[in-house]
Length: 262
Image (cartoon, rainbow, N blue to C red; front, top):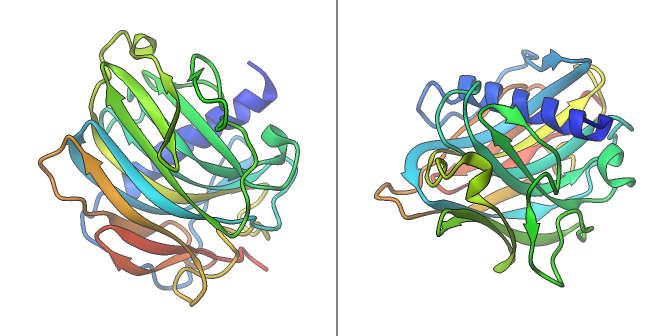
């Protein structure tokens, strides 16, 4: 596995673990207070503002602000994404992810890029590959996105394969054979912002660098479920409200972001 793939695997593994812990309360919570709670592991420290729902579905979609957060270190990242997981177990779950990231180690620059990622039985793979099949001549995983614009991201299971959509364009799929045909529905749906940095007091921004509780911050909205009897309702939490928080929370949207320690 390359160092680039390893960074992606560490990021997703910790994302899944932290989201499982923060969603346990089962109620919508506006983060407050000043206690720092970044999770440091494998030489990187991770912070999240996340919305999550436990529901059986065959897909989900969200619309997000696409930003170019500053302060990202050469081996860190800042991102927003949608993730679908087969179970609540972080050690055996099958997971698919779609979103945008600023990750110089993966993308070679400090601009936002479209990405996809997946897990097989709790084992991480790599960004934008490792079995993902691209099908669009205009939308490609890894392509640069324009900061300050809006993007709609969706994942949907069709005939056993997980299709990825960006702005309503189906640009590729994860073949169901990656999971032996056993991953056709999701039980856990998450939409979140994430920061990875060298220390828990970094200057890495989330979103556009504005606190989610303040005006003009980045956002996630338009959350929808497909093939589900449940109504869409996100539970919103923050692991590190001193530096990154949420605001304007509804069942299908929230603002998120922050400047980090600077």
